[in-house]
Image (cartoon, rainbow, N blue to C red):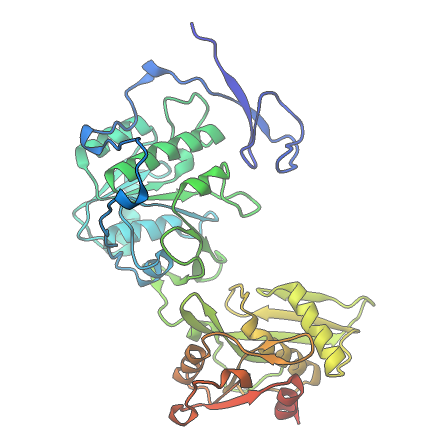
Length: 458
């Protein structure tokens, strides 16, 4: 009888050790190492995915000039938001990992995509729900697809048997943490099981040219559960975000080998499924009849998509001695920098004021183009003077108080004009190439922060 080989893995980061240790040297977490069996049982069952002779790839080195390839076209998912974050559609043979909190809507999104792919044969593998539960969700979504097949199975050996018989064109796995390979003796969801099952599915995807969607769990810190190598193995990593108590969901790309990682997809959770939000600026700007102090509109970009977002500020005297600085959806360090600029360059005494900043809609913004909107919002609340809701801002603020130019200003201006704004403040260095006569919006070009403040507050 062969000797059983075991090793210890960190359940937090996936680091491996020959013996148990109290603190992981890789991530610094305590008591996260567990023992897992590594021995592969050759007689446990058939190979998980055997390549046919037609799929064998030569291992001999070849000059890069002699390597030929065919330009494979992406196919449409019939979901504009998912197409956008994937870079234009699904690439054949790609592996896509989707993570998110429990109950956020990952399974609903994937089942909705499976039912919308009318021209492809789709196999939906579920290790968490029964066939009846999936059928109930499909009835609620109100979509029918005769070539969408459901398989409730967790063993990879049986899964690949069904795949060989069905020959699907798209494979969806819900979730990767529930799969179990007979080659690994540890339990489902362990570090070695997740790594082995992902490797088997990756081999299948690359050799057959079938795109594979994996749904993944996340930890309490918000990171994808399992070893970090899981994110390195897949081609695309998508993060499904949002408050489960709110209706809007955000699909964000954190890794994409076939497209940009700065794209954003927005959905609205309804009783009949996820609705695509084609014009997110309308939901990111609150509808109000009168002007309130501390509220401004900033023009930002998420990938190729221009967005107009609402910046809300509240400035009040510090009650407990030490002023508070709170920021939601915006970098707190950059907020402190802008407060220092306003105090040093513009003379506003904000050192003894509590400052609270919020980006409406629940999104996170890293674009420096909303700096001017943040400054105007803070001073509007500080002076208790409202800024007209038909005014928006698109400029970066420097440390000396100068207004700096931002990229793709024409797209930002066009989005503001489309939504009915009457004027926009930009840097005067952005005026090159802009024909103001053709625009239906007034463009205020400024070079210093003082010019903006005197124009807004007198």
